[in-house]
Length: 461
Image (cartoon, rainbow, N blue to C red):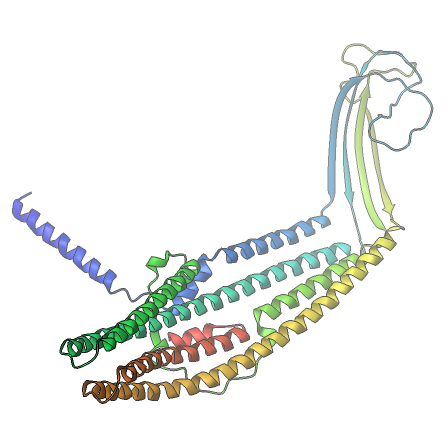
């Protein structure tokens, strides 16, 4: 390859890198909607509840397997003594029962057996259907828990986004205050050097500058903490969190009448409703459990033994292969009559849990209504504040200009300038935060309703 071609490729590469770097520099950052979407993708608690829902779905499939017949198979070969005698043992699982003639010697024989047992419940008085319904309700409860988790994560992520923007606006106003004090310090220093003002004035300005610097440092700390919170939600390091406020700083949300709250539509209320449905379905399944259980059973078995009826033993491999067959079919009915006492108390526990769940639902509905009314009041107050802060800023700046001019003319002390400068800094912070507080109140209203998507659409249409 020629040197000229290499130079051309190098220039193209440098140009491409510059374009890429410029594209990265022009990255507008995450909007509030993108931050919420990233939180819904990355936040671990959502994956936890999603897997809980998958487990609940598997529980439904497990409950449905109760409709299938049960098939048990057995094959066994052993060599043992066959000593028997007449008598009785209480039920236990250690001493084996032995078939054969009465005897007592140490000789052993081969024994073998193979069999298959098929059992099936033709009817169950609705117990299996109730268990399937209970597991279905458990899946719906897990889905409601997932919706509630997604709702909480989206609200918290949006609120953290607003906190970062508010902290950045506070830092901007604090930085402007520092710059103003620095300019005033230069003016005061010149006046003190010319012996037109006492040295105490310069000391006062330096103290105010240090105070403003402390405020700026605190604002920077608040930004770092807020960005760390947002980074936790979106799955990024705090140093990589760059946000795009969108309309949050440019305009206010449209002023329209807010519709009444439907508390039942909030994911928290829906989850509690699903919990009560689950508890009622479990109670119904429990009520279906105190019935006789009918099981149809079919058996095919074969056994082999090296023992003769006379008590003698067959040699060789006799008994290793099953040689005698048995078949049976029948119906088994079991009924735990004394289970009624335990079931009755379990039903009482379930009923009490249902009543507690209904009361908890009322608590949730009351809390949501209070949250909604609080958000309405906050929104109304925030709009009034946002309408007043521009007047506050312009008046404070005019007062600062007048105090500065009077100070330079020797008609006012430095205290007047300091007070006016502080008023300007506070007014600018109030003005920056006022619009954000209106949006935050709108977020609180959306959170009370249980769906912040309209809020996100209004911020970033």
